[in-house]
Amino acid sequence: MTGGKKSWGETVLGWFVVRGENDPDVGEASRGPTDTALPPPAVEPIGELPTASGGVVDFDAVFAAFGIDTEARDRLSKADGLLESLPAGAEAGVKRQIVAASLKAFGVPFEQIIETACEEIQALDAYQRKGGAALQAFCDEAERRIAGLEQEIQSARMAMEKEAGDHKKML
Image (cartoon, rainbow, N blue to C red):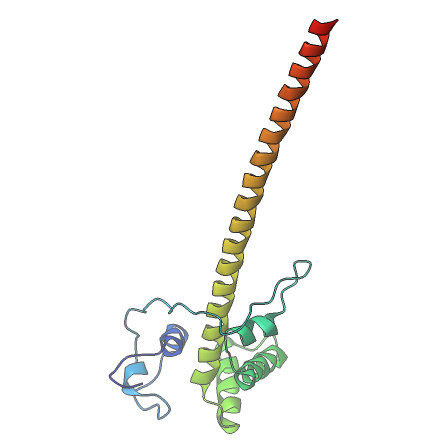
């Protein structure tokens, strides 16, 4: 990054990984303890958001709608698979070293993995918020329609009572 500003991924990486002074893969802004993190930027979809069918979300479609690169998602998935394949009893530091060495061996910067994971989290958060807003709008409209129908029912009952009263007067 230029100007000493960190990307969101570098900031999150700093929460979990403390970089040494001599780490060649890291710029000055990412070494040592991190500064105060900025809130994640608001993300907007670049495509149409998928609907959850039967409560099941198509995560790949959500990520694609927010423009997250397919190759980046694949790299993240492979890194996750690598992490999951490590022995359960291995220490966290050892797991981190194995994953970092594997990613480095295949020419995949660890920061890219973190950045993609952050983008996916932001996309899911925005998807959930938009879904919640759509649900609220639907519920508000349904309540308005129900209130209108209840008023119509009340009017119909009052008309029935009036007609019944008028009919009794005629007898």
